[in-house]
Every structure is written in C-alpha cells, then in structure tokens.
Length: 200
Image (cartoon, rainbow, N blue to C red; front, side):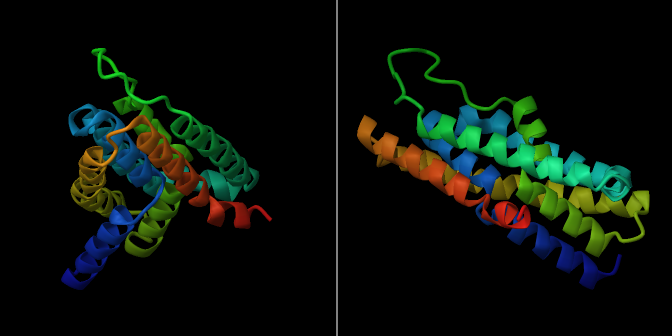
C-alpha cells in the first residue's frame, strides 16, 4: 500500500469515525447519562466490534449479499426496527437516581460489538473501505484496512463520550436530561433517513 493510499485510508477512517452516526450519538448519550468510565465497555465494543466487522466483511461476509440479495433488504429492515427501539429506550429513559450504586445500565462490550452488525453507518463504512482500499480482498490488505480503522476509530468515539460527559454540567435537572435524551433519540431516528430512502 503506497503512502498516498494509506493517507487516503486514514483520512476516510477519521472522517467516517468522527462524524455523527448511531454509534457516536449513543456514546454521547451514554456519556451524559452514565459518565465516561461506565461507558468504556461501550466504546471498546464499538471500536473492536467494528474492526472485526471490517475484517469479516473483507474476507467474504459481503458475498452473502451477492448470492442472496434479499438478505441485504432483511438487514436494512432489522436495522431500522432495532434503531427505532433503541431511540425509544433513550428517549424514555428515566432520570438517573444518584442515590443508588447502579443508576441505569449502559451498553455492555458485547452489546456494542453486536450492534455494529445492525448499524447502517457501520455497514456503509465497512463496505466502502473494503471496496476502495482492498478491492482484491487479499487477507493481508483487509487486515491492514481493519487495523487502520481500529487505531483511528477509538480516539474518535472517545471524543463523543467525553462531550456527553461534559454535558453533565448542563444537564443538572431531570427536565434538562429528559429533553437531551429525547433530542438524542430524535437524532438517532433521523440518522436512519438514508436507509429509509433506500427501502423505497
């Protein structure tokens, strides 16, 4: 891989990882509701889960869509349903009870890793990265693309969690937190617009 291609891959990984999407919106909401430390398993699940996804997509998972096109439609429908459910969970979340040791339950590592497989933006990122930067599907090249995303992705998503944590200074009342959660839920649903258009 030439230096120019590596630079292009790194920029693509940076831009696609740091821009708003289901993962980043959910991490910001988690940071605001649970704090940075309790969101670490969620962040690691996103970072490592997506890296594994890129690797598996590159070595052949995407061929399932070619052989059975209906599976891609099924994936889109399942993704929309699940993301709407998550948006409802975020929007209807009760304010934290700071008098208890476990004020709510953030995403676990496994939940966040599995979520990548129903995240439309993650699929778009993985398919685009493999198509452009590893068209030969060579295992070494695919692994390199996945590694670059693994290195770039985690710092990017950490910024969104940190932003959410900083918002705790503003979300000092149950009403403000409720408005924030509803706003995050609406943005999460809004992120489905490209998928909904493609279903028509």
